[in-house]
Image (cartoon, rainbow, N blue to C red):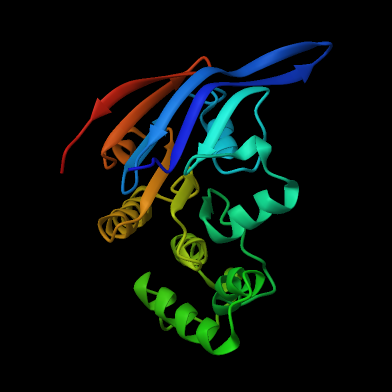
Length: 229
């Protein structure tokens, strides 16, 4: 089976003051379909940089990122945009919801960008918001929702186009511990339904919910722990 993601000798060097800061140093990673992987490490270790590279949001200094065998660096900007739109879902620490749009509209916009018909959009959005526990909050603006509810909207939006890969960057970072546990439980449910997930976190408790945990330190990755549920 072709892996969802493969990286080969992946480097990312950020120019700074005439020199370079090595954010990633020769990372090799393989993500199989259906996996739930957590990337852990201290601030500045390179874990978010790695997530951005495998999500086609950035390009490496050298090395390769393969998405189902396709080299992302060989794709045009338009092809990378289409990949992010149709194949990859993103969940961010700060939710990234549009403040003037309702919960329904924030999820629907992902489907509009993908060219989904109006009738299908309505059914799919309502189903997704119900799935994440917000079926009765569809017409609320982000400012009318709690932090946990906003993150549920963000997860629904990330799942809207049936992505092959879900990337979550510190999804509990702006939430209290109880709400954070609820969001992780929701991600576990999504994973059990077949979704491939790569999650970045600094929280060891959150990380241990994953099936494989990789420690990112000084721009390199190593197996930190593996749990079977």
